[in-house]
Length: 102
Image (cartoon, rainbow, N blue to C red; front, side, top):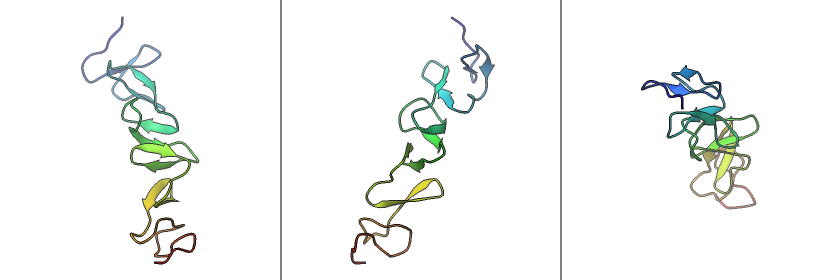
């Protein structure tokens, strides 16, 4: 079994690199493996450890999602929190969604 020096990671092509290539991240054994689903880059192959998302997905608490869910709205590839008084919203203003009161 091939292994790399400390601080290096083994790619699928059996090359030792300081940083795993895009779309891959280091696992516990020091190998570069595919990032969790919908991640463009990741800090590891553990779910919830995305650094950036593939096109069409939004970053939310370490994961890449297509729907930000209640209490959040999509903006520039990220899920941002709605105003405190809103359960749903379409942007960061104080305007709530679904006829909620502010």
